[in-house]
Image (cartoon, rainbow, N blue to C red; front, side, top):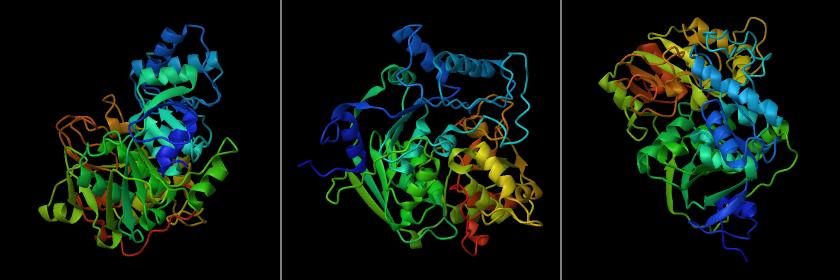
Length: 473
């Protein structure tokens, strides 16, 4: 009889063809999906061709989604050249799932591209971590690897998902296999229903504040309890996304009906396996929080574990120069609905940049009302509400989340303080190395945009914000 195992251990055992695995054991695993994008894709392709040969074929051209998303909206010709490298490889290999920024001319002298005019009429998808589940590449029980540290986002779907370097990705590209060390699992329990003034961003900041930005190095982070069950599936993606901000190998959540409804509606493959935690599984660490005793949190510069309460920073009058609502952590449609409910009928006091996480999110912002339902005649959409409040709204992309070229939308090009729904606030992450980034939920970011100082969203949220079927169907 196999030893009691965690979900992460069961997935790795199954993909290694073994009945059981133990933490710190190294195993050869079959990989279900390998994702790459415009930043790391060219490097991965170069290594693949060098090691497997210039005429080599990938192991499976239906399991390598390629999603340009990082440096799209820039006049930088080197960034455009990266996209052309992807286009050439896709054509050569017959890659089935390639989400091309079809509006982009890759001539180095082409300048800033004109973005898509209609988010529903472009092959471009936006941020890879949002596009992967939307386009049906995420399923319970699978192994998903990506050349991006935030690939762990997909663990919200009950799968093992983690980032890898270009060399490892090139090996997987040619063989469909990889060598993995089984991580010990840390368990983070949340009890109670999520209050109206909290989102998963507050929960993950509490975890990182507790264990430190390296506290989960090469460990699986398992998020459990009725508090996690009460989160929308999109909000769970915020939990698993920021596992890497604690050094985690992967983040993972239980599979429930919310997960299965999404996967049934979207998966591009018909079968998957749901794994559960064994009751007597062993954990490397365990902690429990009661959501009824929780306060909105903010990570102050310059580390995700430098957590403070929003109330504490508000009392100090921490001045802000900018607000930013977007990224794979804060650019989902439910994030946009939460921010729009705070900003409805108001005017922002500081420049506030809004970037949809995907073209689907952008389309939903145009079509849905503040409750996440299709807007009726006379109702304002999420997009219109944000625009009326004075927000500057960009095209779907990673944008300023990781800085990028100086012409990137929302980039911090000067020393300034910005409250942001992104996931990292190390020096220089969003641009200028002397800028101060305060990580917060979309509720806290929106409330702060109205005042110009870090602001507790409880001043603006009196009842639960409903999001309907937004982000699901």
